[in-house]
Amino acid sequence: MATHVPNLLPPAPTSTPAHLTSPRSTRTLRKLQSAHALSSNYTAAGNAPSLISQQRQLQHHKSAVLRDSGPPPAPVLAAPPQGQLRSRMRADSESAAAEMSIGAGASRRTAMAKKINGEDKNAKEELEALVRQGPKGDLSGSLASLRRSVLLDGLVADSDGMSQLRIYIWLILLNAPPFRTDAYLSLIHRGASPAYAKIRNDTFRTLATDPLFKRRVSEASLIRLLNALAWTLHDAQSLPPPKHAPSPSSPLPPPDPASIYLQGMNVLSAPFLYAARSEAEAYILTHHLLAAHLPAYIHAAMPGVHRGLALVDRLLAIIDPKLAAHLAAASLAANIYAFPSVLTLCACTPPLPEVLYLWDFLFAYGVHLNILAIVAQLVLMREEILGAERPGGVLRGFPPLRAKRVVQLAVSFVEKVPQGVYEELVAHVR
Image (cartoon, rainbow, N blue to C red; front, side, top):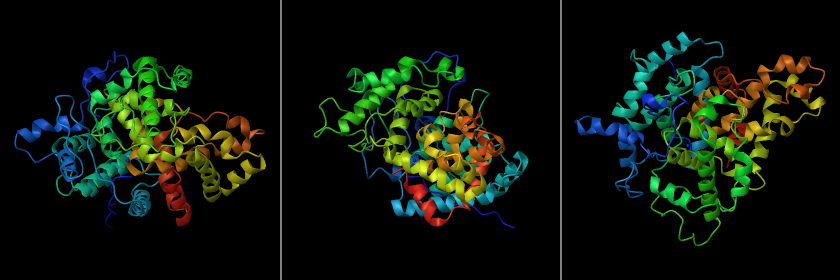
């Protein structure tokens, strides 16, 4: 029986040198180097244009290519129309469910991937070839293969969660636009933003108990990134933009004028700072995640977060009615125990390497699936919750994240969700 091959397009959203793969390395602000730079040697040697080059060629008529002497730009993919996006995301997730059963072992997933791709290659080699040398065939098919590889095989990483390819894969999957490092530096040079006091109150406690994060990312780096982000949000509320704002030639999607700096952005930016090669990379990824993929999460009233919490209750009732009824009888709605997990895409639940694995999946198939990931964590806690005299005590802190199992369960839940509810799930972030 032929395996179904999903036709994925980009959701509406790296190589690290060996000496930077340990969190014990000193991090300094360096020029942004993207997957585009990785492919330059291959292109110059006469090979086919890289995946990044082809993506940029498709978008050349929409925006000017930045060619200053600074760092090369990050990859850009054209996003499909919103209505088309939502229907395809549902189809993509259902295809993923068909490919990845709950009980499938690593060998079964690897065999399935080989069958789909038609070649017996190491997963890491396939991803490196895709990023460095470009697709063998059409662009959309290569993106589908990339997402499938993330789902079935995962990204190769060391025990600290560091991966040679992850940051470039994230730039592609999130459809992050090119961005000049000097534009980031100009935001830093503007000094303290109006939200600076709030930022300083958040940064010292960001992933405070995670030794990997603390060894690799300094508080000063987190302060600079969040302060630059706060200036960007502040500028979006100013018409016309301040004279010190970054040049419009930097094709960042403007944040909604109602967006403001909120607690939780510090935790959302932490995995990017941990995985990225530079602050500028982490900034563009954080900015694009919030502005393009989670816009309803960064309004003052956080409407997207509250819709997400309501969906946790509804989806749990669909997937595990007994567990949902037990929590309802104890007056434990999701807004009591799941607020941090919804707001931060589960980045608040250690360990950090597991968060990175989960984010690989969310960026590949859509950040709206974080709600199903939270439901999956509740299902994994099911026996403990049902057997506790006070289930609220169990839910006071989620157990260590088991990302691979959570992803397997989340994928299996997709086909159980009614179409109308799934459409609400996709739309709740916007």
